[in-house]
Image 1 (tube, rainbow, N blue to C red):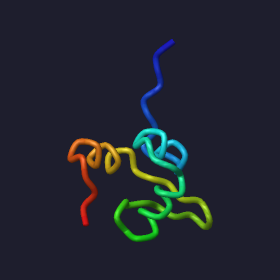
Image 2: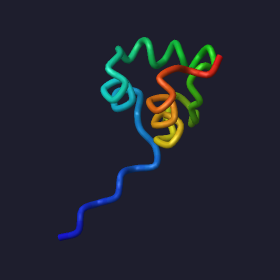
Image 3: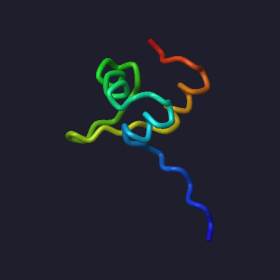
Image 4: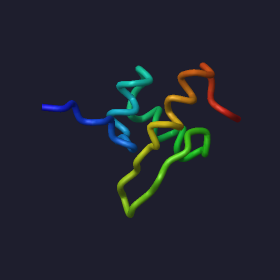
Length: 62
C-alpha cells in the first residue's frame, strides 16, 4: 500500500507538536497574526507549507 501524502493543513494540536510548543501558544500566535491560519467558524487550521517555512527560518515573521 502506498504511503499517504502529508495533509496540506494541520490542526493547532498537530502544529503545536511539530513546533514543540503548547496549543495555547499556537492560538496566541494565530490571534496576533504572527502565524498564518485559516479559520472556518471555530475551527482553526494551519497550512503545512507555512509552518515548514517557520521551521526553516527558525523564527516567525513579525
